[in-house]
Image (cartoon, rainbow, N blue to C red; front, side, top):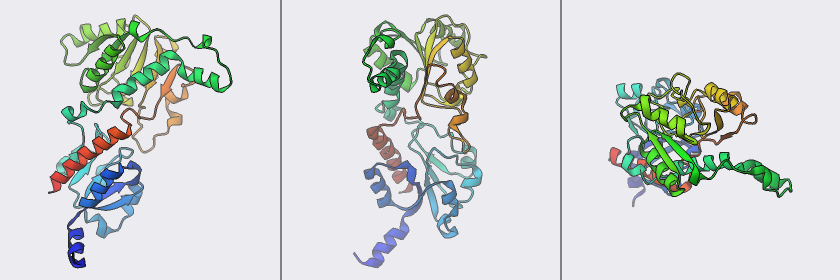
Length: 324
């Protein structure tokens, strides 16, 4: 193939901004390279500093959810057509601006059928449960100090004799129920679409569960788990949150831990974690993690290499179809 022909093919490729920290699976990154001209950047500031000539060529941004894609940022890319994210939520994107500018968002947000095969977040729920109720961390620390005594680390109770309350019975809620039944747990579920949602079913979950897991979207559920909504406690229970930090009132969580209404809080998410000025050391859950039975993981629910490979490939394939 002549050099001029190769150059022409390259120039016909759409320009795509890629954030290095996304660290795509090698095969998925190679697929991007084969279809697009890639401009790799470290962060939003570096993206803004690329030359005006390249900015005017950018039609696609592969988004890193660590950053917020505001109208101010997006407006710098005059010919932007598509935003891509291999995530199930796109709250880090100014959707109103995208709608006014006809910028398409490709994500996993409405990929319900495909996502039934992506199970790590549901699995992570049980990782958090077991860490909280079986004292694993303290037991491991004790062994690391050269002590080998099981007596100080008796667990709460057998899962097979525990009741799991699932708030939000969508895709993840259903996956969690399947796993729970494998442990022979009793399962109670509630969803906003249920009849008598607040009057009966939510109350039933809160009064009869040993462990409650939140599996609700942030949209329309800000501060869902707060003293305005969550009442009528009977049993003490453990709370698991793999949804979003914004669905709970974190001060309320600490209040319930103080009163021992909550026996423990296992969370994969924290309030404002996607904001530019987020500082974990200022977060109230983090500040109280040694005072109470609190486990925090850094939003790793969906983080297995095989899941990443599948989800990345899914949105890349959709992007390729979009630009053909």
